[in-house]
Every structure is written in C-alpha cells, then in structure tokens.
Length: 405
Image 1 (cartoon, helix red, strand yellow):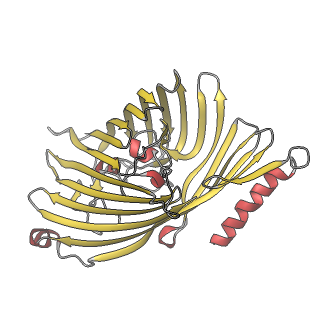
Image 2 (cartoon, rainbow, N blue to C red):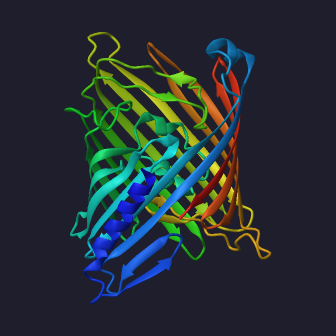
Image 3 (tube, one colour):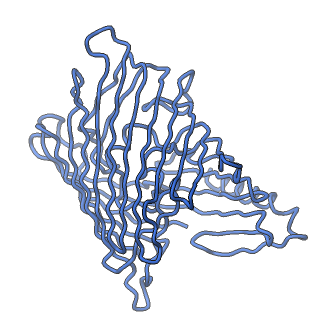
C-alpha cells in the first residue's frame, strides 16, 4: 500500500509539470525537503515526510492500582507518526496538499485540501480536511512541538475536520483572522459521521511584538468554537501527556441530550532570544436539553510552559494559522558542532468535574530535553509526573527519535 501511494505521488507530480517543462524549465533542490519550482514560480511542488519512533516506561502508585487496576504493561513502543505528503502551488494562486499517516499499520488521512490564495479582502480559502483554527499548539506542526505531546486542552475537540476555512493577515501580520465551517461536530466520532450537525470556529490573533533582529516575539490569540452535534452527545477524556499510556484517568464519559457546546480559548506566547514562554486557557460550556435544574456543564483546562536553548537558538514563528516553524541549529552535530540543546518545563491541568459529572481533575508536570542534531533530526526526552486529584500519582518517562523532511 505504501509503495502504491508513493508511486501515485510521483505520477501526479510528473503530470502536473510535464506540459510546462520545455517552455518553462524547473529547478530541483533540497531545502529540508525536496522542492521543485518553475522558473517563473507559477508552479511549485514539495514532497516530504516524518518518522517519529517513541519508547515509554510507566509506573503508578498503589492508590491508582486500587482505583483503576494495575498496569497491564509498564513499557511500550510505537511509530507515533509515519507520514508522507506532497503539496504545491498551481498558477501562483491555487495551492493543495495531501498528507497520509501510516502509523499503527493503518492508513489515515491528515491534511487534504484545495486552496485559493490572494483573494481581495478574504485572503485565503481552503476546502477539505483541514485544521480548525483554535489551538496554537495544534496549529503548529508536530514536527516543531517543544514537547512530545500537547497539553490537556487538545482533548476538548478534534484537531482536523472536514469543512471550509478562510484566513488572512493584516497590518504586516500584526493582526490575523481565521474562520471556518465544519461538518464533523462530535468530539468522539469519525469524520464519516457528520449527518446534520455542524461546527463554527473562529480565531483572532495579534503580534504585539515581532522584532526579528532582537529575536523578540509577543503573541496573543483568542478563539471560539460553537458546535451543534447531531448525535446530541459529547465526551472529554484525557490520558497523561504520553500517547503510549493506556490509561485515561479523567473522563466525563458520554454526556447525553447535548444541544450545543461552546469553547473559548485564550493563548499567548513570548519569545526573547533563547527563552520562550507559552500558555493557553480553555473553557468549555456544554448546554443540554434536559428539563431539569442542571441545564449545562462547565469544564476547563490550561497549561503554561517555558523553554530555553542552551546553545543560543530561538524559536521561529511562521504565521498565525501555521504557528511555529523549523528550528535550525547554529552548528549542526558533527565536525565539532554540538547541534542545538533545549530544556523545557510545562504544567498542565484539566478539570472535568462539574455538577453531576464527576470526570476528575488531573495536573501534569513535564520535564523536557531536546537535542536537535540538525534541522531535520531530533531526539526528545520527556518525563511526565501525573497527579490525579484524590486518586493517586503516575510517572511516565519517554523518548522520541524523529526525522522529518
């Protein structure tokens, strides 16, 4: 299956550019990925992928053993991501992307869209399977995340969805707007099950400071999502911030008779040289159709993190809708170079208890160490200390070997 898809990618690329080749020669180069571009820049094609191999070791105290049962496995390994993609531009103003993940031995569609750029006032439109403009951490590629996994707020809604999204930047990118209409409104359903439900998500952000010479950045963002599930159900559940963990210590379980869900998220990020601070705070209001005293529920989640490059590098911000971009070490590993070394700390919390829903509350502290051997290769170490309120504590040590291009 993998060889078949790769063959399709190459065939499509050949067909796209063959008719223009004689009159409009193409240049081919490596730029942290394979890039093909016509002389007049009307046509562009990039092909790449990522491989992330994770290993983890788990332990939990006697209190959690009593409440949730003893761990069936105390270690694990997986291909967290094994993705290939091709993306490009046609006639300068039409872009496209197809990205497929082969992790866990399954073929899963990630980004798959057709877009139109440079539309007056509107800016850009994308239609297909795209990221909802809500979380800063989910908008940034997993290739560039500071930690191996995102914080608890990611559990309140899916990252990608089928629909249409509009986005544009104003005032030299100091103000950015995104808005989208999506068909899969359920937090715990497949993309094929949409029926008559829908979701509307919008986000506004600003770059209050963007001094590239001093390597200083101050970013604020506010996002809102209104979700109307056809299933009339909603569920939030979270494992410790380690994907290999088989335990989900906190969960609302399925909430029935849901009329709509309102999500509000605030985000901020500050970068000054090698030092970076980032945080998000999310509030979820679930309105039900129950004719009882309890008409709605409120849940919340947040995280705050800090990171520092011991070797002097600085995080790079690309744009509001794509978040942070690739880190390039000042000196690659080898030939007397040490690569880039980053230390990080994050505190994350989720409270899923409200009214008659006893979902639990959990706080995670994650210590991280990242070694960037070069712009395409990274080794990550994370230690997660999980504290489940009134239930017990767990510890997860994990390591990732990552290459992307």
